[in-house]
Image (cartoon, rainbow, N blue to C red; front, side, top):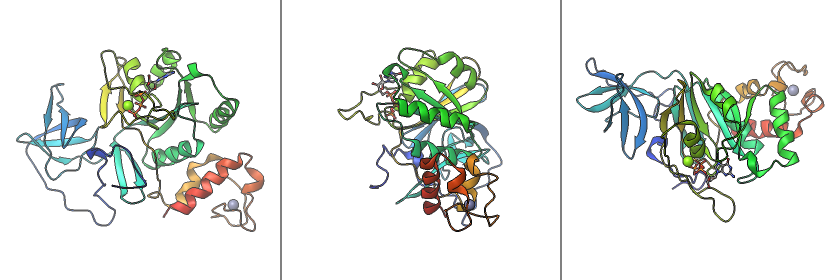
Length: 307
Ligand SMILES: Nc1nc2c(ncn2[C@@H]2O[C@H](COP(=O)(O)OP(=O)(O)OP(=O)(O)O)[C@@H](O)[C@H]2O)c(=O)[nH]1
Ligand SMILES: [Mg+2]
Ligand SMILES: [Zn+2]
């Protein structure tokens, strides 16, 4: 068991095996039908056929995640189609893991107080999403609990950087109309710490959905109630994916030179060297140009971590 990443560690987060450069030859199947993976169920998966019928089936020789298109041969999932987008995270002791595939957008779900808002985690999730081809938005849940001044300031700063923000209360069903609008017609994955209210949001947005919801512990932390990813259909045409809460979210799989492209405040800086990594060396203007010092520090921390 990893000490770095201590979440529920379900099967769907098994190490991504398609490492660059050492890709195993995928089995080629010419028969069978293509289906979609909609839920991880222990070692098996719930598949949905194009006519809407669902079934729980085993997999063989295929590493699949929710929202994968996969080929079914004689009742077994045997291979996946190329992925349009990937949401990955790096776990220090276990390498890079695929969370979900083919989502259009990541909704970073946070609370303001219980559990507390962590800008460093938001920064990481933005990087991982954009690296894998997903758009981002921020959903600040539990607004009924009040909003510390500091959190309001962070939110305003993220908004100024171009991040779409939804302020909601899942339990009081507040702020959901604009969120429903934002979710229409696309596949969105909800990601955040355990206990921020991802599954409660699913219940509020999807009529009839009853994912398990957990109480917080005495320290205001979640209990990792959701243990496997599941895709739900929204009534207005979009789809939404609930995944287990995360505690650590590494982005070590993102090339160091790419990182600055995920920090809009670093674009267009006129440092002495055109390929400046903005680490504050001689001739770097980042410290003078970026007023949000914690975010610059967050960027520099990621540079240390990345390949
Ligand atoms: N006050 C308040 N509490 C909420 C809100 N949304 C969720 N909660 C509570 O937060 C706790 C955790 O909710 P969950 O929906 O299980 O959280 P989760 O993000 O799915 O957690 P994991 O599945 O463990 O990752 C429950 O006690 C919910 O009732 C909200 O808008 N306001
Ligand atoms: Mg949950
Ligand atoms: Zn620089």
